[in-house]
Length: 313
Image (cartoon, rainbow, N blue to C red; front, side):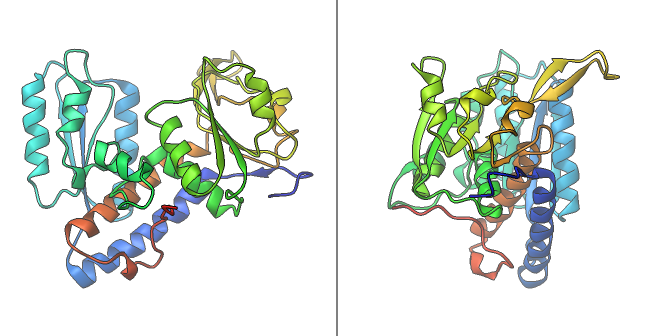
């Protein structure tokens, strides 16, 4: 564990930049040796500002590492059947190795049906039933892609040399996007995991036993200092707007953890912003690269740095 006297700032922005450098180097190898350029397709429906901003960041990151990028920006009134046809066309495009449909979709479209139509070998978000099943299954096949935000959390722990095996971890939140996948990843790395949620009794007691806290509950500054054991490591997935008249925008971004209080207890902690957020896009790029290799029967051992894997037992 890091020193309990000096909290370590777990810098997701710097770590993500390092991962992008690794990916760029590997993409150059794929191009020169195999003639393969990883391709990422993003599908954006409507004009939500937050979704458009996120897609723009993904496109910029994809260009930085040398990916082939395809963007489909569709009208909010598109029918479900027409959207499914767009996804089908991308699925049949050999230059596309990963397909990302930006959520949320308009209410008249079934997110489940659209996401289920993405073939598992192009499921860049790692949320297909097969990928999640293989993530959870002990002794089974490796998932072709892993959920990006949970994987980013684990990658931060590993790159900062924070022990996971044998540690007590509390995951705060049980969403399909973060809470449940990251709990499975921690278990596969031999942590003892408790998943806490809105119905958990004696939440503070659970939190105070944790060596590692993954906070993904979507409530601004919910985790206070008196809920944290001295020396715990905190990965704060939350990103929330908090009114702040002193800021030009009238608000500031905060996590699910009260950073000021938590840093007095934690041995290491992610900031918000600049912690988990940049890692999500970095792991999306890594998933795309891995899917490109899988779809072209290329051994991952050619890479300058092999992808992170999770033991099955």
